[in-house]
Amino acid sequence: MTTPGAGGERSRRKISWDLVRAGCVVLVMLYHSTSLSVFLHPELEPRAFEFPYQVGASLLLVVSAYFACVTIRRGSMLRYWWGRVARLLPSFLAAVVVSYFVLRAFPIEGWFYPLPEDLRANLLMLWHWKPQFYPFIDGSHWTVPLQLMGFTVAALLYRSRWGHGRRILIVLWTAVLLPLAQWPIRIDDPVEAYRTVVDGIGMHRWHLFVAGVAIWLWSVKRLSTAHFAALLGLCMAAQEVHNYTRTPEGLLADTGSSVAVAIGMCLIALVARAPDMAMPPLARRAISWFAGVSYGTFLMHQAIGYIVLRKLQDAGVDTVTQTLAMLATGTLLGWLLTKLVEKPAHKLLMRPFERGVMPRTRETNPVRGR
Image: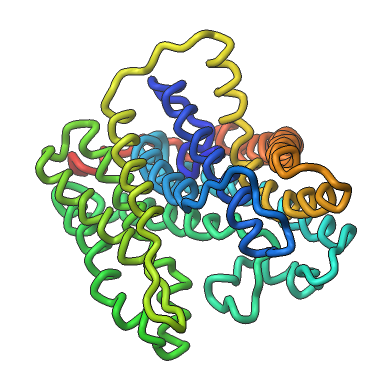
């Protein structure tokens, strides 16, 4: 996945970050193909191998926030914000439309069959606000509005005094502690208006963005190791708390996924601080290629992939081949989406900046001050 915030940007540790991005998307695909697929569609046969941890998408939000810090100083705020929108939105809209028509073209009895009103709701990203009325066409898309909101907040903070100096640390701690303080209300069947606002703005995911910013501050040595450890530890605790869900039997935890996310945060911090790794040229090219198409793969693999699983199962194909076919289909569709939509749309939408029509003034560092 072209991680939100990375936006295809190159860093001096390019292969390390490509490996992180590629690895996170592979984890997402493994979870969806081997675990969530059978959970959502029990008529699918259990997979020979199961990866049951919800970790990849959460870590991609961490990496997204990290790269927001890396790229936000490059040019004007308008250019930064529009660049993120131009990278994310066209591919998302195209993925929704393609998935909609594929699900309608290959309907499976008892499975979700999207209607025109579902297409409109998904294009407008209404799921988090009213999930009982607006089902996902593809469940992987839940990260996109959070990414867009995150980049918008980052740009607004950067332009204000709260994005500079020591004030940014107050913002970071508040962004973790406030959701934790309100979580007992959210988990205890709150009034619908309250739930709509809290879920709509993704409050239970803020700690992932905070972790990414904290990793960047620590990697450039603007946050002490002790302070970084305390803030990152709180983010890890928030991940565990927000992984609790209420069931008829009581609160249910997903501690395995929380531990996996915590380990992933530590690995991302090490990549941010360490020099680039050595790797054979062929492996570098393969990883870089997949990282380059990973956002498209992330958007396209799940809903269509489940149809691939079911059709192959009906044809008598074994579960290992089914899973591999889902991964291959998602990668192929991701490559096509990148080549036909993401790259040309980004180039077209950024043309006013490249021609010098829009301002390209450089901004100061968000931590050093204005």
